[in-house]
Length: 317
Length: 305
Image (cartoon, rainbow over all chains, first blue to last red; front, side):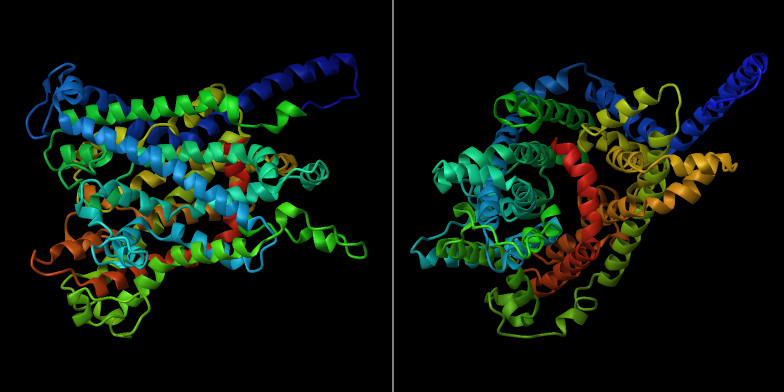
């Protein structure tokens, strides 16, 4: 923005001074427009996020059904969740069970399929489409179909029947209802597969050539070349997957409603039920904050451990 | 998503005239590779076939729960009956979904483009702090604000209207602001400087110069918002309780729930509904693939590294 002015020094100085004044009024104007333009976000942030967050902290310290005035109860809601409510611990345990199995399982399937698709396969585009397609199906439709797939005499049990296995009554059996939800989540492994495949496509060919000259087996090449190169994508999917699966809701609500006997009750369906069926807004808010703490803790743990296994190119070069 | 646009064969073209490089052993596909891929893609595809075959089953088959994976009946009239025979306003469900999804996308595109532009181009004291806040808010799970937001919208008299599902989109979200900001930062600033010399104001630069160049990322944002709003279940479940106002995603659940205990839901019609819910998503994805690829370049890899 500064201009070279080939005039007398005095003129330069006065021009510069004038320029500075002009600049400052202009930068004021620019700042004004900045705040004006970001105002949609700023209003949304204050009105729909910061305000509600503060309200949520307050509500979590009260007992409130939204019809009568809130009653301050201090930490009671948190104490109740952590010591007095067996369903809370069950829901937390179930959510851990679900997240800690479905996310790694989805990643293992994703890495495995991506590695197969990364080979010179005929019809690879078609295979990839088949594997990716389920991720485009809205969750509600997925849940509807799986209600059928997982029915006692449904296709899954029919398939197991071919191998002489008598399938359980998936959604009505306390031991099998969580594995059933995990099966449903595995159907969405195509999303990770496609991301991992694109990461594998980007691995320099020379690395494999060098490995081949060194006589490394395909298995060894996978673990020493492919895997380290895709760890950033695995890490990204791990974080997003964990955050997402801790917040599982629709599948549970539609397929099991938390049953049988809370065997598939999870954190968000629990807080949803407390809030919108029982109008325990205080308790539900406390559950929401506890969920937030759990998600944060897991994200932090994942980031901490990532230093030891996620490989970043920059560190080497 | 990126993979759909990257071609491993690009190398072959480059090397015309030269000897094609020897296929490395890791890239050799064995019969086992094909066997596994065939089985796995069949398993991934079965629920789709099932969706179609149930949607074409007769009412009798549906009532007896006697479905086959490969369709044996072809009751095409199910696709018209779904609108009349369920006792629910299914046509209205679809219309509601279209309305909510479209207006949400319009809101996100308008607001995120303006806010993202400001973060990328305009200078102001406090901007850095604001951007830190944008990034930080991405980590707040929706459940934290769900209850106070509900109470707020209830206070405003918005319950059982579309407003709680649509209006927040006009105030953008952190992720979209981030995407637009990254995108605009990569556009050269020479054009806006020239425009500024010509006396164009900041809004003019946004409207005339930057906005026309932003459309790949805005299309991606529109697609993401559309798919999210179209499939959203929890939002409508919280805010909408009259049949007339329900979107299809919620209406479908309603369809399986309204029949009495003794009677099975009309599975064939529910599956028709599921297909109606699914097809637009597949269509949008295939039409917008390259913009999603763009999005992935901006956001995905930025998130990865």
